[in-house]
Structures are given as C-alpha cells and as structure tokens.
Length: 143
Image: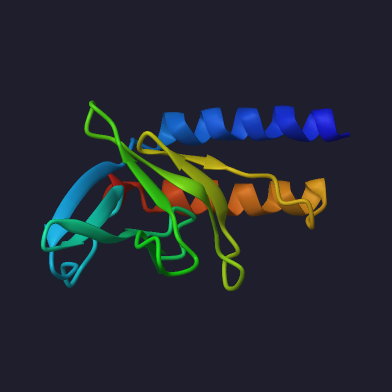
C-alpha cells in the first residue's frame, strides 16, 4: 500500500508540474508588496540580508505563507538560490491548520507530500480539489 502511495504522489507531482509553471524568485527590500502574485516566491531582505520568504499557498486557498529565514528564530527554513534563478527551501512547508498543505519547495517547483494521517482516498480527494482549484484559476495563474 505504501508503494502505491509513493507512485500516486509521483504521478500527481508530475501532473501538477505539467499544469503549473515554475515559481519565479523575486527579492524585495523591506516589505512585501500589497498584493502578492501567484507563482512567485518573494525573498524579503533587510539591509541585504534575507529575513523571510513568502508566497501565496500553492493549494489555491489564497492564504499567504511566511517562512522565516533568520536562523536565531524558530521555525526556520534554509534558502538556496540556484544559478538558474530558482530557489529551494528546506525543510518542507507544512500548514498545520486551515488547508493543511504540505510540500517541498525545490528549484522553484512545488512537490506535494503524502500526509500519513490521511487515508489514500482522503489524499486523492484533497489533490483533486487542488487540481480543480488550479484549473479554475488558470486564467489568473498565467497572467
């Protein structure tokens, strides 16, 4: 059953990455813009040092995610900027409330995780909702 789940997540991630373009990385000094764009990972800096990363939740719920990049504070993510201008975050991003999205952000791509507390049918239903939301909002996504 576990093997089936891993194949399922691989198929889902492939489908997701075919439908949804990679995220751009945008470095901003001081504050985030009033309205965040979809498919953009914002790196907010203060005096040239990254303080946090922010993005619109990839599940389509519209919430803004904030990932702290200051190592003295917890929780903390490590940011890697790649030569192709993409970014990666470590560890995974996991919302514990609301939409409960759980994903890795690697080289500008979202890689969804299997959540062990959900049954396969619950996970499939959740992914289906994400795909439907993304397809419905595709006009906004590609603008």
